[in-house]
Length: 111
Image 1 (cartoon, one colour):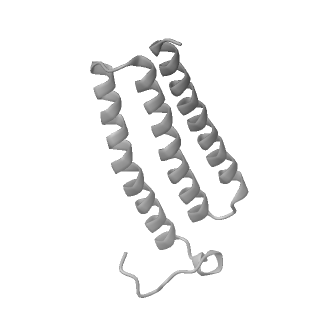
Image 2 (image 1 turned 90 degrees about the vertical axis):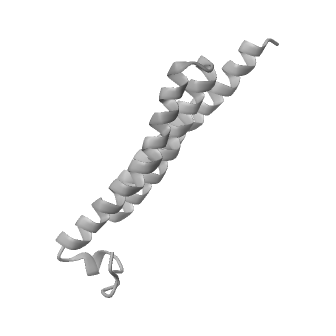
Image 3 (image 1 turned 60 degrees about the vertical axis):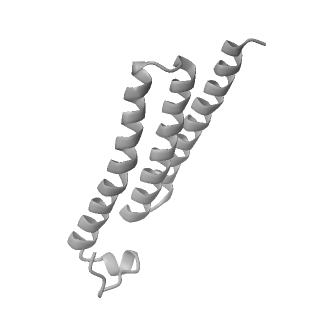
């Protein structure tokens, strides 16, 4: 077995696992009823799934200038996804008048 085949198998496994994780996130979006639960599933699975797909592409392509760009994309996603999900959750808590019925909200929290 040559090195190219080993790289191809590793990349294929990473990409397939990433697609499965993103598929689970899509299933979670339809399973949960409330926005905050949907957001949590979408952001965690989306970040992990896309990261695995991008790492699979890096392994498949080899190290080059494109690899550096993909690493930058992964770093940006790891920074941007938690911040955006936090802001969406804060907006939902601030604007939804019936949030107490949907989930437990601590009134004294300074978020």
